[in-house]
Length: 238
Image 1 (cartoon, rainbow, N blue to C red):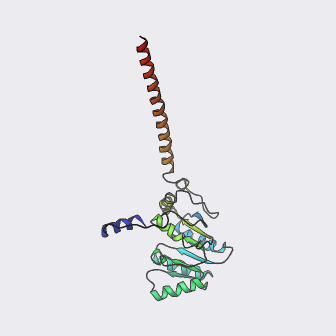
Image 2 (cartoon, one colour):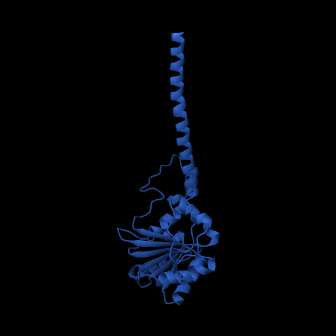
C-alpha cells in the first residue's frame, strides 16, 4: 500500500490493522526485470515497438501508462503498426472494460495498455511481458504492476522505460527493492544516479563506523582493568 494511502486510512479509521501476505518490496522470483533508459519521452514509442518485435514467443503484453490520453494514443500507435492493442482506463465503461479484458485473455487483442486505476482488477494468465511505459509516482505501484506477469509459477519479463525526467522514480524503485534493476540490452547509457542503490552506501558506512567504535571501546575497557590491577599491585608491594 502506498505511504500516502496508508496515512489517509489512519486519519479515517480507528485503530486500523494491516494484514500483509508478503513484504511490500517483494517480487515474484520468476519475473526477469530490466531497466531501459531513453534519451527523451518521445523515444519510448519506437522502443516499445522494438521490444514487442523482440519477443521470441508472441504472447500477451501489458503496458502501463501514466495518463488515460497516453494510453489511448499508445494503443492507437501500436494498432497502426500491426500490433492489435486496446486501452483500458477509468473513462471506459464497465462493459467496454470487460469486453477488452475478454479479448486480451483470448489473445484476440494481445496488447493491453492500461492506467493504474484500471489495472487493479486485471488478473490474466500467461502475460509474458509487462512494460512500464511511464514509471509510477509511488515505487510500491511498480511492484504491483510487474506482479501481473510470472503468475502461478510461470516465467515473465518486466521492462521499465526511464526518461531523464524519471530518474528520481527509478531511484525510488531501486531503494524499495534494495538492489539495482539490470540494464536492458536496448538501453541508452545509464546515468551515475542509477548505478548505486540509494541509502546502501550510508548503511555500509554506518555499519563500518559501528564496528570501529566497538573496536575502540573494547580495548579501552580491557586496558583500564589491567591498568587498575597493576596499580593495586604496586600499592600492596609498597
